[in-house]
Image 1 (cartoon, rainbow, N blue to C red):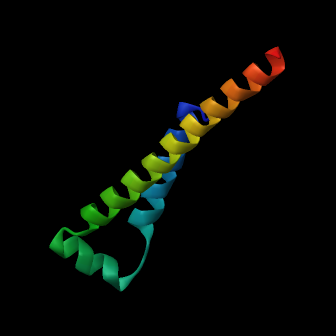
Image 2: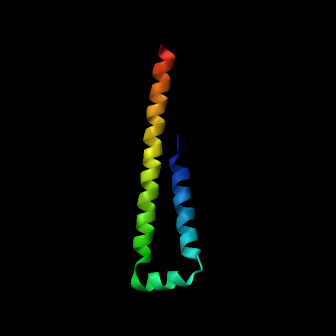
Length: 70
């Protein structure tokens, strides 16, 4: 099971690395305000993946418990 603290740490590190990327495109994206759109889309994708994995883990655990009862 994924702990909330590890999820928050991963997100914080991800945002840190995005903000520290030294690329000419970042200046262009920041000047247009598009960097926030990029970060938002990436975060939504990551949150969706984490939620999917969390639900999958719960379903597998439930199936394992049912299998052990039989």
